[in-house]
Length: 109
Length: 114
Image (cartoon, rainbow over all chains, first blue to last red; front, side, top):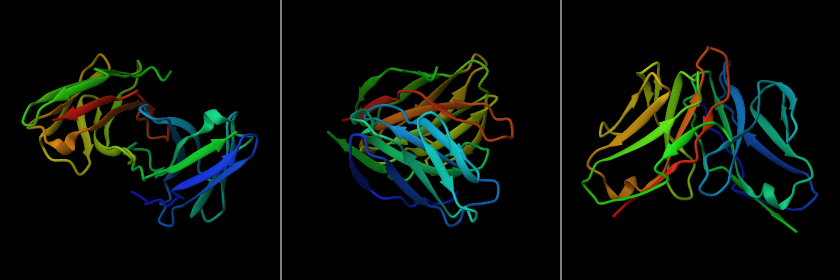
């Protein structure tokens, strides 16, 4: 399983855009990049997934450069309810996910 | 809501005891994975079941075992509990089709071992 590296924490204010970059230098050809969000005492919640280039859904965008050795999760116009831990994962289609420590995002008023 | 439920929500056991945690997956999901999440850490993969057979295991001892049933429910059993087993236990269900798809996590069971 590819190892990922992401910042331990990030602070932001309501209405700002938050960008979290994840490094995954050893990503394999069949690995996808997936981001999860987790609130305290809850299970992780799927945010977005991609293989290359850019993916956008109703809550976030995921930017993946051509070499796929990193990815950036972009959360537009965050609110206080976006305060959570965000995990970057890379995995093939076997779902045996390897979570790192994640990035704790704190949104302030 | 992910459609994945777990029971109980909280549990207190003493060292040496045995525990069974339960998970009910989304209908049609043929794969269930179990994770252990210690306080302040990310979830760690315990094992995965696909069509009622173990389909991979993480770095956990044999006293962690599981079962998956045809009705999309599953169990995690832990024998000879140790203090370090105190954690949030998460199950996640998905459909293993050979194409990357999303895992859906349940809310977890908080286990405290005294």
